[in-house]
Image (tube, helix red, strand yellow):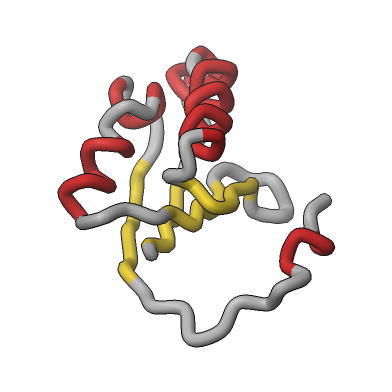
Length: 95
């Protein structure tokens, strides 16, 4: 699994591509690539994605489809990790 920290500095590109970025996130979630995602609080630009991919190369190919990536509207910091435990009730914390 991978944690992806997305930093979105204030820019015209970020605002222009926000709707397409949100559609991309939802599509990746529905395809099973993203296990959870959401904005940082307070909402001052950026968020976190928990992703599943067979390899870092496969993840990079998925991230390359993000309109924010395509238009250089965000910075991505990717960290691979192994979950030792996952709470069965994690969905209870969805906002």
